[in-house]
Length: 213
Image (cartoon, rainbow, N blue to C red; front, top):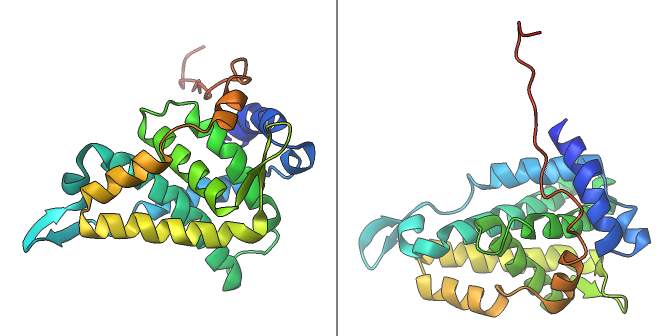
């Protein structure tokens, strides 16, 4: 119920303003659910305990204030990469790839609205700018964002490599360079975000309590 409500109450309305109509129409419940599921699974992938200059340490200790943003970006990036990999191995149906790029693109705007100072928001801004640079996203003449599916997997693979190597090395300077280069909201993205003020940022679930009338 949660993914379904977020999809129809938030993601689809965002897509209607952030993307061309033909791309917004590809937003899909299953793609959104699988992306979210694999995002959470991806937190368990990659380095955690590492060695830096001969001492045992942890990624989160070495990357300090940037650790959470890179971790959230990593989870997003590996979610996309892993879904492509599972399709290639015949574990998931290939139809999901018709909907995944558009669903992920709309999701960038949903997550950014939590704020760039927040880990998810900054992680998404990094991804958006990286994909724009690599040609996996393009901005139309009407300042709408369109995914370029044929470039999606390659761009996500490259970004996964960058983030995972920063984590594996405990490279704080490398994390700083990544944030400095890609961590500022693109003007076209900001223009879209400015149009979304009447769309809820998130849902507020209400759970009935048993036994209460």
